[in-house]
Length: 250
Image (cartoon, rainbow, N blue to C red; front, side, top):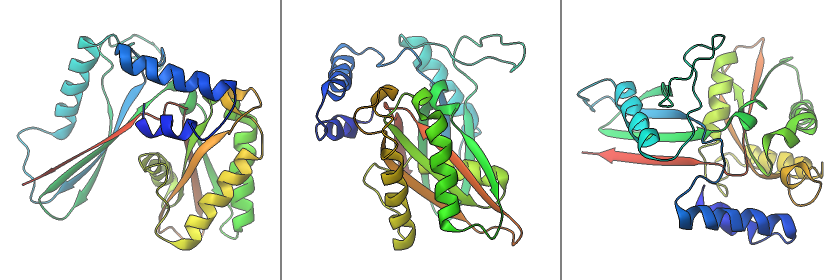
């Protein structure tokens, strides 16, 4: 669990926030998972063109995840075939997105995604003439229908632009941002705050019980797109919001 969550929960009063906070503290003290769904690993790798690796990064990541999930009391949540549903028994393979960049730096961001929040993922192919109001309405209406099933309070990622697949990757990438990190563009930063306010106005609350906040934060990532399309990806993290970041430099 992101340590910042415990601090965030300190700002909200009520019995449910105290239960979530106590659960987080107990999990840390005992070294046990905070939830029975210990998720699947999704990595975002920014590899500089001067970085030389001994083996493909995907192999290293799979090995690391296999070791951790075999050594710790974590549930295995990956099946080898989406229809045959046979468990791989080591929580691999991982999902990996590679972003080539310049330099001698290797940055790895990752999410530990539970199935409940992942099931809230949506892709919307809006009309290219859609307004900001249309976008906000689309996102908020989707979460109005589904948020309670994702173990809120949620962290919300939105990807705008690119292609259909790019928008979804951007939405996931947005979830790797810090809770208090706003978009560098003031217009998008304001849009993040607006969407967050409208989501919390839904009053879905902690675990869908109608009290407390529905979302911690909203983060947006964008990319240029074709003139005839406006892809919008929506991704969420559950209240645990498990993420991490590693940076290696020569």
